Length: 524
Image 1: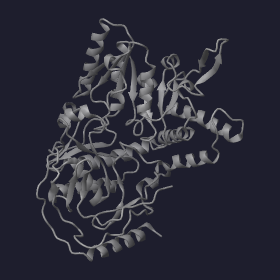
Image 2: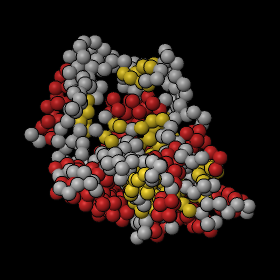
Image 3: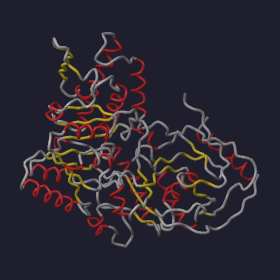
């Protein structure tokens, strides 16, 4: 059945049910300051759609969205593009995904690669059978594909990990003794926390690219004046909170002047921009499959071999060992394999590695089209939200872009700095958690609220303990979704929530009256 017919039937049925109940309208009684604590008794009083009657039996319905814009290029199509969700007023709408910064749906091309892999899945590096040999070959070819995806040098090593956090913890494990690590306080916790406190220097949060370079240059010069120990500098590819791209090459150049190595956190960057560690002079890069349209439990650390080969195994197990023996006295001796096997002990996640390679191949081939599409959608979101009174766009490099904040006619414009499609904002008078819940329940829009695993940056830009709403686009986001988000926030600012919400400590906001049947059977 065509998508339009399915939506028409579902929508008509839901509206007939809604019409069978009496409704009333009440204005919001009060709002709360963004990020402020909410008392147990606090409630937003708004218009409930169904003040009485039985619970509505409309499930979160899935339908085929045949006209999704991303389908114009089948290579960029994602799983779940046909998901419909029920709203509080009885409609079924297309799920608008603005949470790519947390995790991304699988590309259909990736899902096909996984399906093919599972049909011939076998043990890696251990079997003589056809399935084992094929899986082993694809696993090693996946390593080559991921290396090419990040612009690795010929002698670099690619170690498969669980995700970016795991990759950076692996690198921390492999640092030579007495290595001093330099990080910016603005970093995601995955890049901020793995390093030994006593050998970590935290740099101030910069307001511009030039300030970031200056902070790093001064700190490294002061360290090198009295210490020749190894140094590692962490560089963020794109800010997890704001989406702004950091001056990667310039920071890497500063590090090289002081004989320091660099590690790039590319978790947010790699899904949206080309990565080239060879051209940029980066020594190591970490990335996650689940943010790059391959949510199958795999990530990677790619970089120079020497530190990885000389460190003890990250995980002591079979596969990491080259030979295990005993001498006459019974004392054991282990000869460990070189990297990457040295740090991939146990049966590897071959399916995840192949999925990551499939995503890397697809994104590399379609990079130009994907970037152009995301730039258009991001402009709709950012310009639209910036035009709404009471909405504040959160920025990292605020001073750098202040002069470009408005067009010649005084209208707000998109941030002048490069951005991977993230717009983080607050709405005056509303708890960000409530904003996110209203967008989800009333409009079928998925955003993220909170502090985004970057607490120090949020404290600096939002205030101590404060939170915000993050809308992060990707290949599952459409122009209709972007306009719907802007319209929904404008409606919230103008009229308040359309329904009553209550706050439960530890759980957040929820509708006072919710007649949707949101139960779903387990997938197993």
